[in-house]
Image 1 (tube, rainbow, N blue to C red):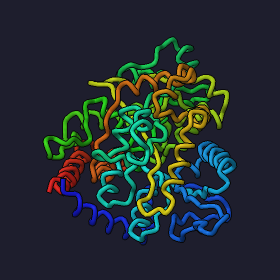
Image 2: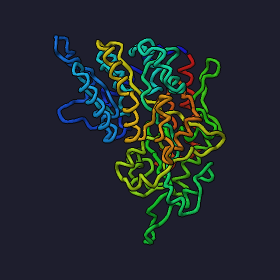
Image 3: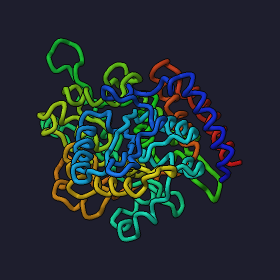
Amino acid sequence: MKYRKLTAVLMAMTMVAALFTGCGSKTEEPAQTPAGQEAQGGDEKSDSGKADGEPITIQVMSGMMGEKVEGAIEQEIADDFMEKNPNIKIEFIPMSTNDVQKKIITLATGDSLPDVVGVQPTWLAQFEEMGIFEDLRPMMGEEYVNTYFEGALYEASVGDKILMFPWLCTPTALLYRADWFEEEGIQPPSNWDEFLEAAKKMTKDTDGDGKIDRWGFSMVGTRNNSGESRFVAMSRTWGVDEVVDNNGTWESGFTSPEFENFLTYFTDLNNEYGVVPPGAVETGYAEAVNYFSTEKTAMMITGSNAIGVIKSQNPEVGEKMASCMLPTGTTSCSATGIGGYAISATSEHKEEALEYLKFTLLPENILKFAEGTGRMPTQKDVMQDEMFNQEIFKGYVAMLDKPYKQPVFPGYVELLDVAGEAYSNIMGTGQSVEDAMKVVKEKTEAILAENNK
């Protein structure tokens, strides 16, 4: 594929957008930056500690530091590392996970990337073309590399290069209220017809005032990464591949009848059946989790990280939920939801950054993270811990056996937004599925044409 032209265009567009829109209006609420620390990335490099006796500072751009549960645990692990390694200081730069890709491009263009950067697999093709991150394979060594699941390494790599430490994974599964299902005498849904029937049964007026106050499904309907990634995860079970490399030519299932069928099903959950809370297109991840934790919804399709958030908001609900595999359409699959950290190619402290990242991935630290947040290990031996035999994890563990290898496609973010625009317009403005599909086909074909040059 000829990425260089696309990369240049994307960089230009992204930088203009960042300058004039503050990284766009579709993102969720930005992460909160601790007092006294501006989220400026590496625009101004910290004192590198070159003088004898001064600690070396490693800047870490983290999307998790703005999250209440994840941020606290990540800081705790960093504090432990600094206590054991007084010559190294870890300095976090919190960033919203919905903004970070644009920020990385802007910082890289200005040669101001921090030492360590939180990344997602779908961005790696573009970043590899830009040459902004170190190949970690020779730094890690093959023995260390082989401790990871093959699927985790696949998503962390572009070709033979490993561009990020596959830190943790959040496979997508169905989280549900096990106690309510038991009360209704129904099993967790195994297909989408059963899912709809369960959602209908769980949608009810619980206090007898004539108004619905509990719904079957916590839909994330916002037009951003949170909404679009869940929508696509569901669509794959209907036989829709958002993009595939067919002998050197990119193709997309977004133009297929299967996609139109799923788009109809998904939007009908709101428009036709009313099994989701009002205001679906304004319901982001945080709102959907809040509905679940406050006992307003019975099911949520989400990554395992929602477990930790729900437990922190309402421990009693945390004890009453379980997980199962995603309902099956024509297939059953889930992206592993790998997230991790890359080391900047311009970092002056690559070895120290490597030392820190390896410390965070010690079994005791990863298990601490898993227990507190629901995010799961990417290393084979750690996954054998008895923690993952609990009902709350069973669906997520099962989905790891149905991996979907997410394509490394430079136009992936733009393609997902095509889907987001479609469901958002159908549920938010009343656009018909037929009219939405005309736009989907037109925009999908344009994105594919640009990347097939």
